[in-house]
Length: 206
Length: 206
DNA sequence: AAATATACTGAACATTCGTGCAAAAGTCAA
DNA sequence: TTGACTTTTGCACGAATGTTCAGTATATTT
Image 1 (cartoon, each protein chain N blue to C red):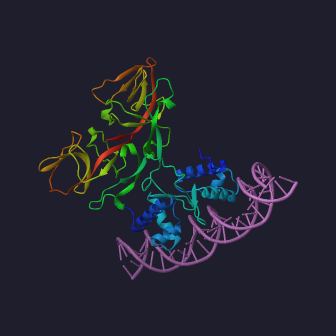
Image 2: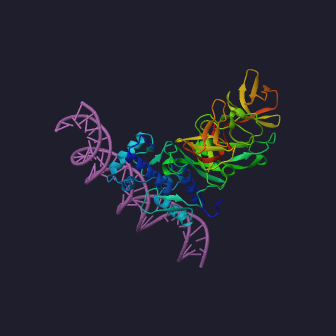
Image 3: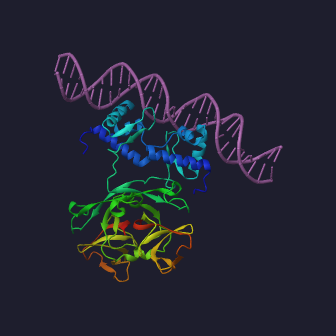
């Protein structure tokens, strides 16, 4: 599969990947040695330098745990994207501002496409009948306009909400998908209202 | 944004995140101190222990660079996985057999976890009220048993179906989540019936 | 067969790094 | 102000970690 790597290099590289996955930090020489049956730290150094030379990882001398995978070996299959997950949305601040960011979630490109995307966690059941449940993670395209019928993420008086978008002549209706909730009516240009984006997908852990 | 953190803790946490993002490894005490204006390693230790105590990160004593973000503060996805997408399920053949495979979909590990997982596309609206719509991609854990209340993928006379699993004394009820559909009753050991897996998550393009 | 390259071992060695006090400085309530 | 906390400094210590160098065994080349 990696025909240009020796067996030892293979196993070291694979150990580093597993270790990174598990601990979120690179292993020490001794840990690598113990896991791959190299009894001398210098043996590890030898293999690591070999891998570095072949471009599979990079090292910073004199620093502990300073091996990192390169593009070549960090497998991030294409078709996957990392989408920023927005936490609480601070009113006024730009959507993707540092303080709004809660983390990242991986998503398949068939779901989120290739345009700008952000993710947020759903609170409440107001869109239940649209198949959007409490706790779901929504993917949305940032935009300040929307078409009637779109499911939008909107900012209303400092609160983010997800609803069907139904503009009328003089006002905008934000329709829930749950009979136990009432539509929210916004007089155009009246209340502190803003569309943040249009929902394009979701993901749920059951 | 994190009201229970002091300013110092905030800035240290944020530095650790930036550092992780950039170098793929945690910083040392001295690096943290230098970046956040704490001139003693022991000062850093103090702040770090405070953060650890509040649950924002965890430390392993005696190890270098052994701070890691917890769920609470993590910034990068635990990981992404490629899940095999099952197309038509040929009766009799093993689930993951080559001829059943339609491709792969990317999924966030927070949704699919780390165990064996397969994916399949939903056909029909019989689980609509469980928030599972036509066209959704389901993630499921392969298993031949299930507990009452689980949503299962089951093979019934050569057809795969997704339903709530409700075993009774002498028979098994497969309950839809849509009043327009009727429960499917399977006499135990009678019809050609098999559980393929338990649904653990889903993903939808809107 | 001798020379060379590869893939290590083993044992110091030198930094880097986390730990452990003791003490100072800052904070806040009584 | 006093006293009780909290937060930070400073420094020495020892454990953890990468580096260096001298060898060894094995295979490959010449």
